[in-house]
Image 1 (cartoon, rainbow, N blue to C red):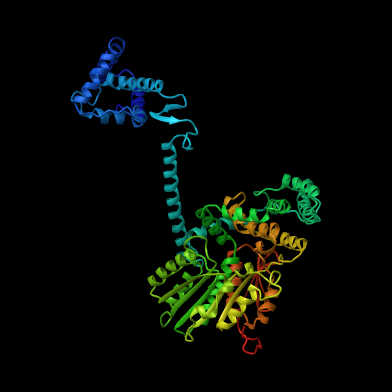
Image 2 (image 1 turned 30 degrees about the vertical axis):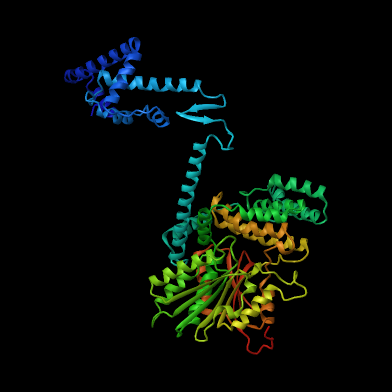
Length: 604
């Protein structure tokens, strides 16, 4: 109790002159004063001899004392010293004269040894913390000494392994929880954001309103971007550079919606002006943020934005209805990544009256670079297999790592007894169109012809309703500016302000697409969306027939959006397409198709 400062101070404050306390303290005071006197005398008279005798005493007791980097870090640690001298028969709970002097002189001997060692080292080396350290760059090119670098490498590897493990756990939790089960974390995120959305916010100034200097700046950003794009298109480098400088004064990745759009669009224009658009895009895709942070950010995006959730629910409900009364289901999934869509459907099929059907999924995606081109697809298959086994659903998975247009119907081993479903959610926007293939069938029509040959019971087709695929740069730029301004406005409204996860989603998902459209041309321009009416005409030319929307599914989704998401999200119908948008602007569209038996299309 005497070692506790707060107890001692409180006791002394209440009883400052207690005779019993003074009597109890007297023996300890005598011991401490004697030890201090002896230690001081030893330092003055016989420090070298004391040092030698103490070291010999330690050696006799088989105490191994190393003057090393480890000791230099621990030499002032009382616990460490108690461990060294635990073998000393004279040591007690309270240090004796001998142990007190040993404590201090050991430290003196160590630092004196360091000084003597430094005298024999070359000038380009130094001793720090008991280690011989080189200058910043030694002959081997290592930084700050070999041991230091190795330690850093080990730390990076440990951190990388831990991050990968956390990423897999997060990904598995997202997939296995399901997007429609409303796990606690998602409910809390939605509840928090719903309250914030109800609070009054500053409205984003629109063109035509005259309400001060800030409004002028915001309005001018759109005008400046268009003028800069026109200068870049005309190769007017001087004007484009001046406009870029003006844009950079006001744009920011953390500003309002228009400032953030201007930030990324100006980067694309600058790369296009310098002629480095392809290198710029490849560099940006090669330096992605950590998977863990992106998964966390995308999780919040899913909790606050209905676009992906509605598409998944639409697809799964359509497939569930298509397999009613049947015993086999085969899903051909174009653009599969993690398999995030399918656990919810597998669980529903497991609970189906009469038992689940046999489920087979063929996952198709572009090959990854490296020795495992199908690695991502196979991981998704393993994850889904484990999940299906957990719920007792017979399951098979087939991974195909190839360009979508290279996959043939014969590669899928279609069984006539199966209910065949083809699923593509926003993946076909990256297929090349006829603008690059004038004299041959373009990849989009090749994929649609393959789907027609499969003769699926239903083809679920979700598209990005964008018109920024025009051949002329300025037409494309204006359409993209209109489209991405709506997306960034949605992100600003539904995400908390100054949220780092919002920046991640915008930079890693939306901004990359925008900058690719601006900075790249030809085959390097990867993102080529069309609006839903253009896709409707293309599907019909390929021999597909559009199916009517299921009114029960549409009603359920409308209620979902109305009750769970921000009021500015819209969901509507047009020409048998289910449209999704923000503030009246259509951003995504969903539809279902089958083979048109009356079509006169030739088998190609």
